[in-house]
Amino acid sequence: MADLEQPATRRYAALAGWVLVSFLPSLVGAFFTPGAWYAELDKPSWNPPSWVFGPVWTALYATMGVSAWLVWRERGLSGARGALTLFDVQLALNAAWSWLFFGLQRPGLAFAEIVALWLAIVATLAAFARHSRPAAWLLSPYLAWVTFAAALNFAIWRLNA
Image 1 (cartoon, one colour):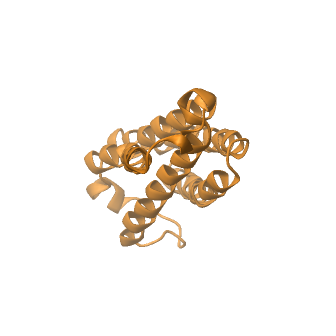
Image 2 (cartoon, one colour; image 1 turned 135 degrees about the horizontal axis):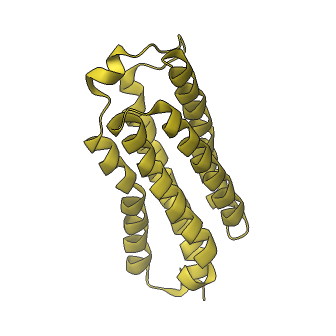
């Protein structure tokens, strides 16, 4: 049963919940910050200034939450279990990247992990498209940013190997 039949207060509470869940990886990112180690690394000329990352991730986490909510709203938890499980998997991979790159200071390992994250986002986007086209489109900027982040991760890894 689609959750459209639920009261508006429940739907909007669920929206807030999905957005909050989507921001969970940012807690790991807040704990494992770039710091002095990252500042000393060689970076490509196209590395964005550090102030760009906060606003970009804020917008991406918010749209990810809305995307998951749209799928939930359309199909409910039971009707979209596979798609929403993929969403959770990619969130966990998103969180793991900060720990690997900044926490362990292992850009090579973080690159391998971000490739897995990219694949999980593609799978999530495809699964979401089966339930809600707008939900899939909302994940497109996230996929684009992670594609860029993977290229940046790779460049930093190679420049500092």
